[in-house]
Every structure is written in C-alpha cells, then in structure tokens.
Image 1 (cartoon, rainbow, N blue to C red):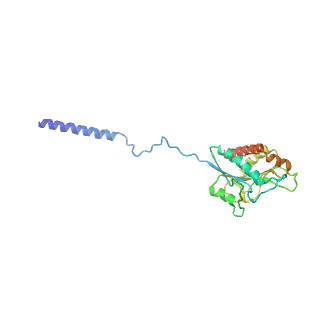
Image 2 (image 1 turned 120 degrees about the vertical axis):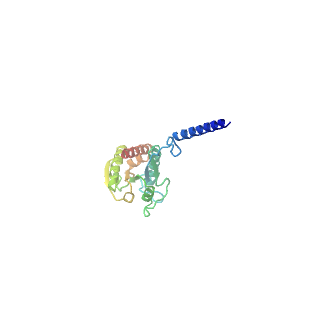
Image 3 (image 1 turned 90 degrees about the horizontal axis):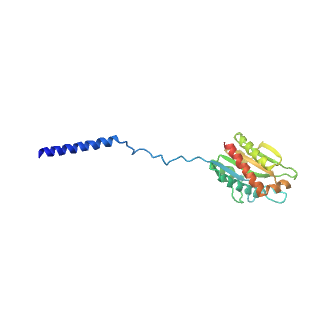
Length: 221
C-alpha cells in the first residue's frame, strides 16, 4: 500500500514539474503592446482663407456698385470647398458670413496665429480712381512668405488673364502680424468695368479657386 502511495506522489511531482517547465518556456506577452491596429494620424496643414473686409466695411465699390466684401466671401467659400477635399489640408476661414472684423484689434492675424496655421491667404479686389487701371498683383511682407506669394501669384495671374502687376513687398497688417507664410491677393480691379464683370461670374471664381488650390499644393510639395 505504501508503494502505491509513493508512486502516486511521484507521478504528481513529475506532473507538477512538467507544467512548471512548460509555463516558463512559453513567451510572456502580458506587457507587449498590440500594434496591429494602431497607426499614427497623418498631420494636416492648416490653411486660413481670409475674405477681405465685411459687415460695415464694404471695401472697394465696383464700377457697377458691387462690394468687394461680397466678392471676396463668394470666392473664399469656393476655395474652402475645394480644399476640404484635399486629405492633407485643413481649411479655416476668418469669416463665413458678412460680418465685420476689426483691424484695430487685429482679429484676422490673431485668428490665424492662435490656430497655429501653416498658411494664410487674404483675398481682395483692387480699386483706383481711373477705371482703366487693371491687373492682378500679390503682396507679402516677411521673407518666409516670398516663395508662397510667387507661386500663388503665378497660378492666379495665369488664370485671370489680367495684366500681371507682379509680386511686391508691403507692410499690410494681415501680412506683418501673421507668424506663418502669408500672401494678400489683389485679384483684379473691381473699379474696372471689364474686370469687375469677369470677377463676379461663378465660372471665373471657380477657376480662380482651382488655381489657388493648385498653388497651395505646389508650395507644400
């Protein structure tokens, strides 16, 4: 009887030893992170589109009585729609309605700076007392904005077909106070009857929006 007890105890010991060794040989995955379904979120470029003027500030008055503020907002909305389809871009507008943004409190550049935007594009229509004056011109201030201004201007100027008035340095507050590359676009002279008539059409604005989108993509490459 004692032999059977000793044999049973021996078998139990061998079994316990077997399971102990097997457990030690198996890899411990309790502290390992499962990375099969995790991926880093691709960073997007924040682009601010700034429709010039607004609210009590109509901007330039066109040859037919149109307002610059309405033209810039209409164009900005078309640009925004196109940029929203770009996976690497995140678009923001300084205004989406006919509202006034104070120049004294620097609301426009402050909006872009607080957003930590990557690009800033301000839209305008030019004006002059002589209605025969025409053309497209673009402005920048900081050195790091010059390349952006040159690229965007080329795309815009080719699309408008207006006289190319070039790229110039100017200390407009929306350019001077922004901390990211910034450009101010004077699409054309709204006081020129022919340019105004063209600028107010949806087809022209849509083509212009495409040109600005292409310029942004070229710059970011």
